[in-house]
Length: 136
Ligand SMILES: [Zn+2]
Image 1 (cartoon, rainbow, N blue to C red):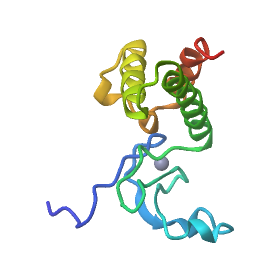
Image 2: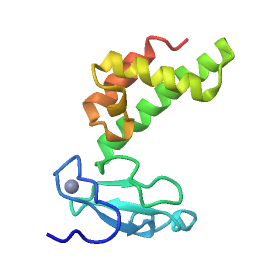
Image 3: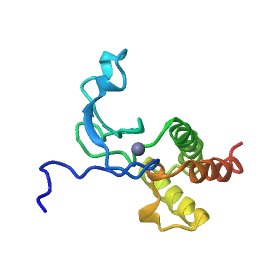
Image 4: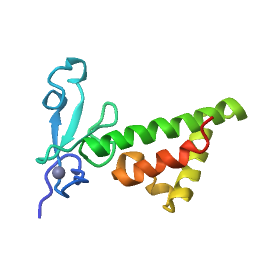
């Protein structure tokens, strides 16, 4: 089978179908400042953005409840490693790396597989709970 040219479509977290690459005006018709970006959109309405300046998806397309949970997970996790930078005087890169190592171990998954953008809603909400214990 011939594979179409271009990046490999990420599979939708909600329905399992491959998403399609679209201009972000499809998703943010009111936000022209985002129109230079591309997004992966599934027929079911789930979507995910791309890494800046690329067509590489940031994770798996998902619907709003999962997206909201991932945003909360990022906020909770970022607060943790930012506190470590302040406390230990390490670099942002070091703090994030050790943060992800801790997070992967806490979730019982491989560090390589530990990407908030790939998480389903339940896992993202677990991240929020895990990180909250260390917020002060
Ligand atoms: Zn879908």
